[in-house]
Length: 540
Image 1 (cartoon, one colour):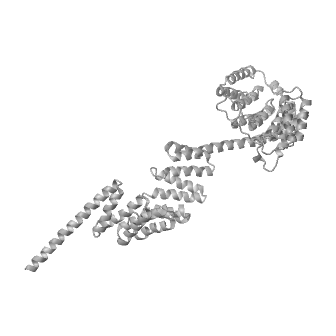
Image 2: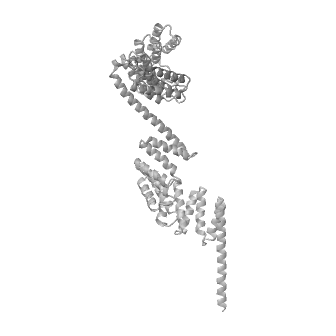
Image 3: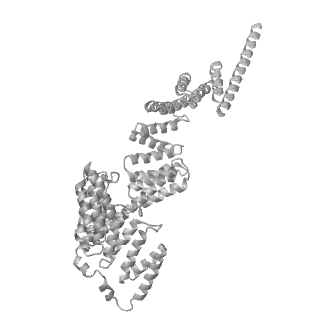
């Protein structure tokens, strides 16, 4: 009987001690969790450490051991965190906390850029914990490492595709779908990539990868040369995600597309221009005879609205003089299109080009100006404005007056081509000497980057200036041409002319020639000053 009483006493004593043991552990654990939620990491760590030391057989011990590693991970002590996570896996290899430990070990190895070891940690979860809550995240991270760090795009793609096939409703499905689009983008299969990115937008409209997918959709459309659709896509990004980093990218792409569309319009204009010039070359003699356009005007039937057209033109011109450019364009277009047989039609068309290149026009657009001038050559090739249009097209490309046109095109080679065509087709045009002068200006404006091998452009500029002097000695630009040619021989301006001819003797001859041929020129004082400078350079 005494033995029975002793045994019962021992049983109840152990039971009560056991209850106290686990109650203390449980209380400490929730105290530690509360501190952890308040980001009181050091205090929480002490409590979880106490549990793992004093209550190592309690239910809270595995989770407490994991939290020790997690806290060290959060405060950036990666080496210590790895030790605690490894301890967790060693002590509790089949507990769910081991899956969590592998997960955070993977993130630590990514942080220190050891991607192979990171991959191993995530793969351990995939292989050993198929039912763990971390399984899909680990699967996704495995694919992400393959794709973004190891650059094994195929293996990454297969992993993401498996996530979509097996877990289409998971939190990582939208991200997996996005990376499938990235896979086809890396393979330069832009049509398929576009389709995959569109799935992200359509199937996961609230997902975190939607803006990325929209950016990549726009890039695919650009590559597929669907610029207008790409423009709409980037505009949508800028509108739907204000204040985000995506807006900057979207706006950069919008600017790039607008530039591309202008270039496309520009190239089409050049193609049309070349075609028109070819037609003009075949009819040079005929164009000479009809340069005044008088025959066209005389051939107009009575009652065709000559007075009406004149009044419309006068109204449009008044609007232009008042700087009311938009309304002026409307009036000039009406004349050009509705009264195309009138001599004022080509003049009206010319004025539209003038408006788009006018320095006082806030909506000035050199590309549109070129298009409008080119229409004269296309629609009115025999009019009196044809040579004017060619000259202004060349002038627009050149825009050599930087002070007046700081945003000029400065397409010097195209300008030279057009000025040469004008001289060839209209040798008697009032613009021919001016075209020669502009050719010289364009060639002398070339930077050394345009011709790193030598000074060919400067010699071509000098040739153009001298041709003007020889052919049009009485022209108002003849003295300027000789002055510019002489300065090119000297080429003292190292900032703007780093490739200098430095032919000082020839420069001196040209300046002295200027004094003889143009004694009354406004440039005479400048020439005398240049002679003094040149003599000093020769004597050095």
